[in-house]
Image (cartoon, rainbow, N blue to C red):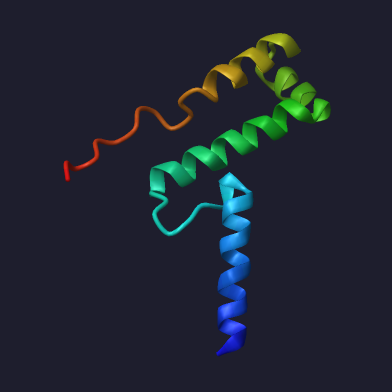
Length: 85
């Protein structure tokens, strides 16, 4: 029983420390947005991936970086309507 409490406590600590890990009330949309933004930030941060994407899309690195930054605003489209409480 103490192991279960300890694991739960560690999970709560991680969730409070890192926004992208989610929590019990995280919706599917929020989780997908966090995942997409993390991926795009990684693509921008690793210049080799940015080179690859620029080559494949036949665009400049600056244009690819700009497009990725633009997609980070709403990577999964508009948020779904929440039911009124």
